[in-house]
Image 1 (cartoon, rainbow over the protein chains, first blue to last red):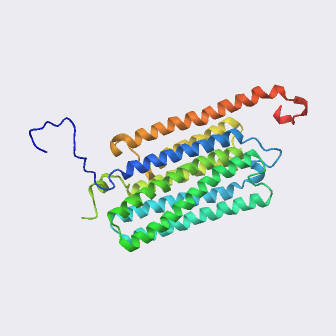
Image 2 (image 1 turned 30 degrees about the vertical axis):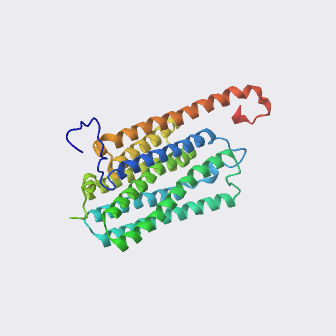
Image 3 (image 1 turned 90 degrees about the horizontal axis):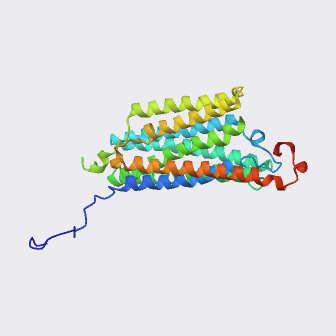
Length: 201
Length: 122
C-alpha cells in the first residue's frame, strides 16, 4: 500500500484472534435456542388444559421425583462451575474430576426423566393421549434431548482435555459448554415452574 | 502463560464464592415453591401462583448473574442487549399466544351445543 494513494476504506482485513468472537456467537445461538423453547412453552400454555377426558397433571406427576430431578440439575450446574474454576487454576486433573461428577449428575437427571416418561407411557398417558400430553412430551422431551447432547459434548471435552490438556482451544470449548449447561438449568426452572408446580396447584 | 490468551482473560469465569452464593440462593428459591405446592398452597389460588412464578423469575436472574456471569460489560454490552431483545420476543410470543388462543376458545364456543359439554367446559 503506497502512501501516495488515499485510502477511503480499509483494504486489508482486520486481524481477529482465533476464537475471539466465539463467546458472543455462542451466546446468540443460546438466545435463538431460547426462542425455540419459548414457542414450546407457549404451545404448552395454550394446550395445558386440553386433557381430552384423559389424565391431568394431578393424576400423573410426582412432585418428589421432580424435586430430586431439579436437585440433580442444580448440583450438576455447581459442579460444572467448579470444573471452570479448576480450569482457571490450570488444574487439569481437577477439571476432569469435576467434569466427571457433572456428567454423573446429568445422567442421573436423564435416568429419572426417562423413568418418569416410561411410567407415564406405561399407564396409557403417552404423547398421543391428549393435546396436553403432546405438548408436555414435546417441551420436556426437547429439554431432555438438550441435556443428552450436552452430556455427549461433555464426554467429548473430557477426552479432548485428557488428550491435549487445557490448551486455549479446549478452554474456549469448555467455556461454551459452561454457558450451554447453565442455560439448560435456566430452561428447567421454567419447566418445573410452569409444567409441574402450576399444574399441581 | 502461553495458554492464557488475551480473550481468555477478558471473560469473567466467576469465583468460588460466587458459585456457592448462586447455588445457595437457587436451593432456597427452589425449596420455597416446591414446599408451598406440596403443602397445598395458600388459600388464595392467585397468591400461590404469584409466589411460585415470582420465585422462578428471581431464580432465573440468580442463574444469569452467578452462573452465566451476565453483566453489562461483557462483549461491550452486546450480551446484555441480545438477551434483552430475546426477553422481549419471548414475552410477546408467550403472552400473545395465550391471549389470542384464549379469545379464540371463548368466542368459538357459542356455536357448539352447550348442553352436551361437560360442566367445567361451559
